[in-house]
Image 1 (tube, rainbow, N blue to C red):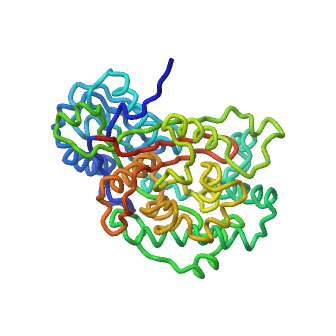
Image 2 (cartoon, rainbow, N blue to C red):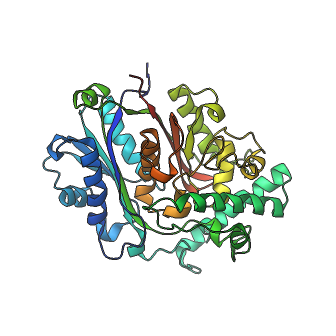
Length: 400
């Protein structure tokens, strides 16, 4: 019978590049930047890494379709390196591969790394118009902002929330993230933004304004993982362990039946239920110290609070306005600034979220450090609300 991976794997070291418009370097420089930090943090030599997983989604010009660019950039001599892609959960998918390999006993030390040079692709967040093409006849033209604006419409309809009430709540979500991101030297955007500027910004897809949408960025993050015994043998004392790591992918049910009202993301709820069971969490609102969630849009973060069971259904607007997710609130969310301030280089985001939880658990988060955190959750959401992938990882401190 499967027993899960709780406390079977610990993080030996992590690294994260500076995120932003990194025009002056290539993908290989980003992965090296993150890897060198992780290697120094782990206190090992590169030759001790026995396998690696590389997450990259859209960076075809720099990376192509194989893992070879990573093995050559980092000179990973003679070990298996696997490239993975799972939409916006790509970074977490890389972590899952490395963690499962260690948990299975296939290797002692594994590397997970994700990177993306989105600025090089020319992608600006809104797709190029394709009217009149065969592809458009098969897949009607849409955009990410439009898809997630529909989530806002579904949420309003279900709970009777006015447009202005929801607009104020999602504006406060963005305000909170900018307050946090201003304290993070690795964030793409490091400037506080006042709430009036956010609420009065140009609309992208009603009710989402400019500041309700995350930007396009370049970046990389990575983790080196091993077993608790090996980590202790290397002299590590305070160990951050993997409590749970779960993914849920759409079966198409939400678009093929009338059972979904558009107010929530079913995949997130499924992944959360499994992750809490694996981690032994009964009450996430009380047991989680912090969260990093997939705030590609501010409405996504708000709805995710309910999908994760931290806010009750229909209660996230009140919790947001009450400051429950602020840095000094009950469960701080996006304490590093989130996608809102880092942008979303797809292959890197999941590992970047884990990096923040890792730093917080070890007391290394500098000006944004929380008081005595014990458990951190990160969440990715790929695709659109009704069809895609959700990924959740939960990190905690391993008992001595």
